[in-house]
Length: 88
Image 1 (cartoon, helix red, strand yellow):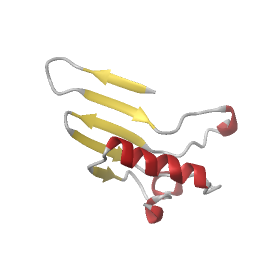
Image 2 (tube, rainbow, N blue to C red):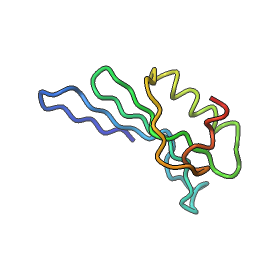
Image 3 (tube, helix red, strand yellow):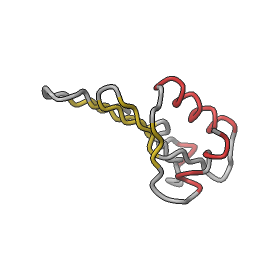
Image 4 (tube, helix red, strand yellow):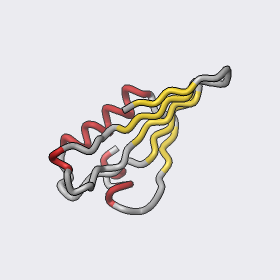
């Protein structure tokens, strides 16, 4: 999901790297979001779920590379928000 806002100010885009899907029906979706404001790119959180699957780590790593992340902001010290940090 991506949301874009533009009103004469710098372009703003927000997207989630993970989404709620049937496999994640318990509502536990890893937190990892990209926010672009003009030329600056922020990643909010780099979480994984309890499975610590390689596919989740790859999604986050690919997101950092593809979106050329400048800064990583962490919201809280929980697996769902910082679990992938040691692997980045």
